[in-house]
Length: 212
Image 1: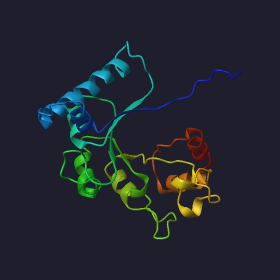
Image 2: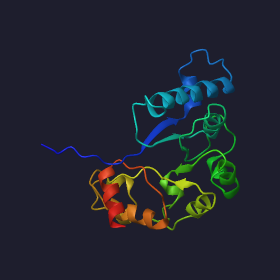
Image 3: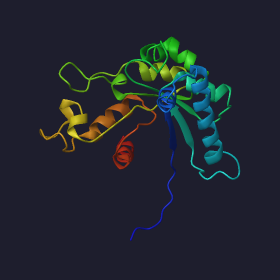
Image 4: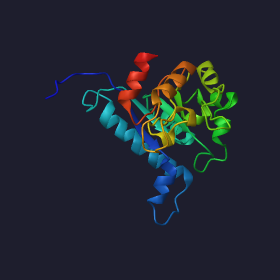
């Protein structure tokens, strides 16, 4: 038996790659990029209103809406007037149907452009602290400082405890599925100034924060 407790939570509502997924669901593929974007943004906007807005909302936790597409987030903010905090996810390459690579979006000029649209960024964790040449955890980039200069939060992804996902200097043994020193990895990112993290192990994330 476990006692019922109440704890504060944040909910991240993922729209991820809406244009690509929307087009994948269309057999004819004939609609325009603008229509795909509008349809996806409208669907996210409607779900946000149903779940998180107004007196009849079913969820009362703070919610963030995240996407790998800047165009999608811009549409949510301007055309659909979504007031929930928006998070721009970033990784390798570029957003779907967008010639601008993530690298440019995360440069100081790109962050200034995003500042008028989003409340935070969710970069792949290697964009915040890359691996060194030997596979160990390296030195933080300027991304956190640059984002904070624009008043944007930084929530990197995804922290996993298994050795196969950790820098080589934070692994325990040689078995890929065994847990390594994820607390040390999280501590390094917290010390670098991240505002939050995406992790498959929320209990370890909370523990790392309490130890920081």
